Length: 431
Image 1 (tube, helix red, strand yellow):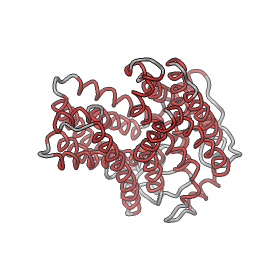
Image 2 (cartoon, helix red, strand yellow; image 1 turned 90 degrees about the vertical axis):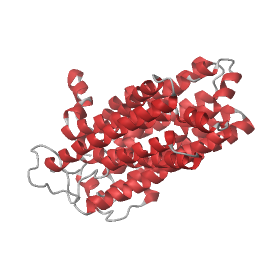
Image 3 (cartoon, helix red, strand yellow; image 1 turned 30 degrees about the horizontal axis):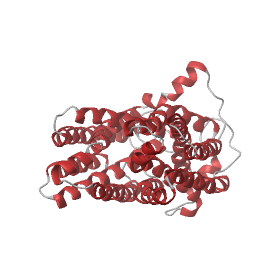
Image 4 (spheres, one colour; image 1 turned 90 degrees about the horizontal axis):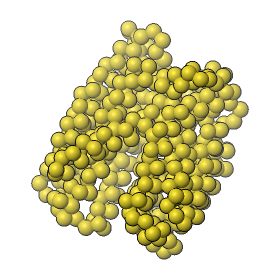
């Protein structure tokens, strides 16, 4: 990265030499970290009763550790994304990984609620620092032809944290106590650090950091970029439908089919598997579209429509088979949508890669809270899930057409990086 904050020529050359393939092993460290982040995000839920009993608090009180993680991530990610864009990926990644290791070690040593909440807040801070830097690093070191595939694989491994990491953590906790799950996360992070040292290039010349109101404006610069502003707005609506409704998925399935806790755990695996499939498929389909000369996110409206179908089937489909098919479609749409959004953020404004990625997560959490509140306002969770989930999914699908129209008119459309006719002045075409 140059002193202007832009990727330097060597990074460009490295990205272009990827041709139509990319070396997956080159990203072992960041992929491992994404897997651990995915596990961390969901690990407390199955451990909550055990944790609450052990530290002698209510389950509601213990759940504050989840809230601490999510809120700290949502609030700090855009500011920490700016640090990554200004000072380089290596420093931010290593600092985030080190803090992630220490925070999980602190969680394992917690004997009371206060230290557990603080340790989880620090874990959220660590993920907020490293997460956007990871997505930016992958995007700027892969060629445009395989960028979606590489980002999709990263998101698939994040989802595998729920599919594989959480069950493994639960088994470990059952054998050796809940603290062992956090110790395993710390140990996994320790394995990732030397890989990060090898994989993420050093010698980045930092941009001159802004100060005061200038730095503050830079954090919010993504909202001043037309394509990103539309994308972040759609992101909020999509996840209000997606994760807002997901908050009540267990309630809906229990009300409809009287599922046991064990059966709901298996549904959680289906959720994660759908996310893996959607992430991988979304990356490949996006790469093919760009190779054919279409714009970056041709499938955004389709993911919104598929989400609406999945939620509707889950809430109203006759029989458990169709309801579970709806769950699978729901999270295939979720995985594909996230990858299209990450690809857009990584491409249309190269100077804001990490900051834009961070805003995607922040608006995702904001949408989740809004959607959960809206669904919870209904007396019946099934009705709320259907009305709010399907309604907002359709809204996101329709709004996504405006994102696509803006990309086509801006000139940030072609896979080969050349502008189309009528390209808007000042809009970056490619990294």
